Image 1 (cartoon, rainbow, N blue to C red):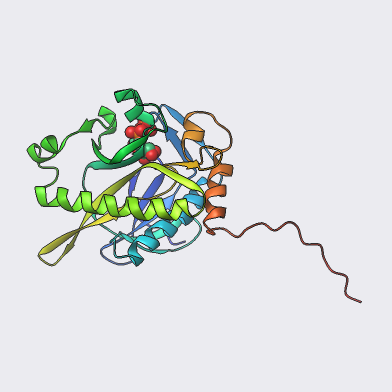
Image 2 (cartoon, rainbow, N blue to C red; image 1 turned 135 degrees about the horizontal axis):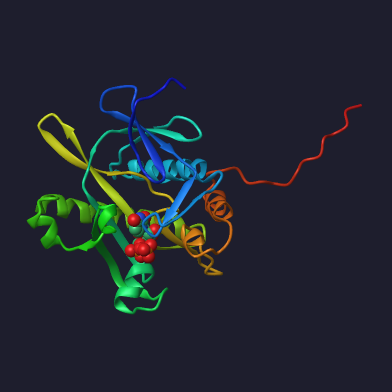
Amino acid sequence: MARRKKIYEGKAKILYEGPEPGTIVQYFKDDATAFNAQKKATIEGKGVLNNRLSEFFMTGLNNIGVPTHFIRRLNMREQLCRSCEIIPLEIIVRNFAAGSLSKRLGVEEGAQLPRPIVEYCYKDDALGDPLVSEEHIAAFGWASQQDMDDIVHLALRVNDFLSGVMMAVGIKLVDFKIEIGRVYEGDFQRLVVADEISPDSCRLWDIETGAHLDKDVFRRDLGSLTDAYTEVARRLGVIPQTTGVSKPTLIN
Ligand code: UDP
């Protein structure tokens, strides 16, 4: 690979300048962090799996008319994306109670919510990504009212798509986080789903057993993260099924 110019290095990915103006390359690392990077590990193969899984979800969204920054996967760990200006919000959509919502509101983990709930966190590691309301977003000018309408619309479409895709393979989509970027086209701007969609940023529970198939495996020390992500990828047909070792045939 020719040396690319690094734009930014985050916890799980590195962004490089893309080959053409208006493009970037996302490189998926094997690093895992949790609890605002207080817990860290390198998990061999995670980056490769997330690159493939994010490609799968973003391609599906593009195909149903939900715009994303994803252009194409380049290799095992890299994908080409449109460069965009990230809105400094984490958009969280929840279908079942879990994690911080359960803690905050005392709702039992796994309880079905009366309807999907959209939450916003201000992206700031030093502050621990605090929960904010639309009032904060408008007052501090992080997004306009029109942006917010578009963001909710995009987030709910992503939720319906992901919920259906996961349900078809026996997995419950408990919640997920997305990031939204602005893409400029002449004088116009439009919003696209950016960053990544992978088990790092979703809660995925096996419908039959309730087993966690997401980053909670790492957060809560529940076993092998690679095995969990591989299981998601296998069910979605993103990586070929292993059909056992085929024996060599003797040719006379
Ligand atoms: N999430 C994420 N990045 C963050 C915070 C949350 O991807 O910085 C995802 C998380 O994986 C889960 C959803 O957003 O799928 C809701 O997370 P929650 O607010 O419950 O936070 P947590 O319990 O993980 O602290």
